[in-house]
Length: 23
Image 1 (cartoon, rainbow, N blue to C red):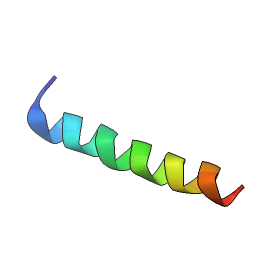
Image 2 (cartoon, rainbow, N blue to C red):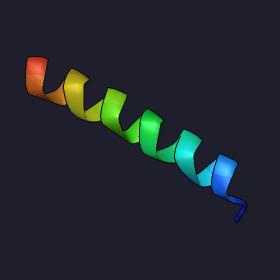
Image 3 (spheres, rainbow, N blue to C red):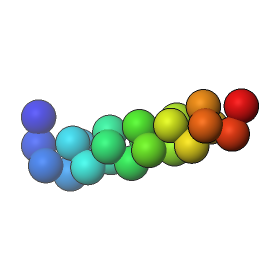
Image 4 (cartoon, rainbow, N blue to C red):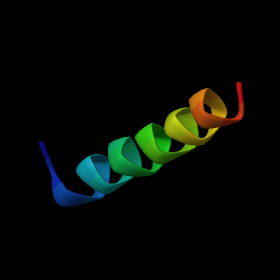
């Protein structure tokens, strides 16, 4: 996996975590 892809996955995970914490 290339670093840019990895960073995008991390950003997506952060967004998902925010959604879960809001729920």
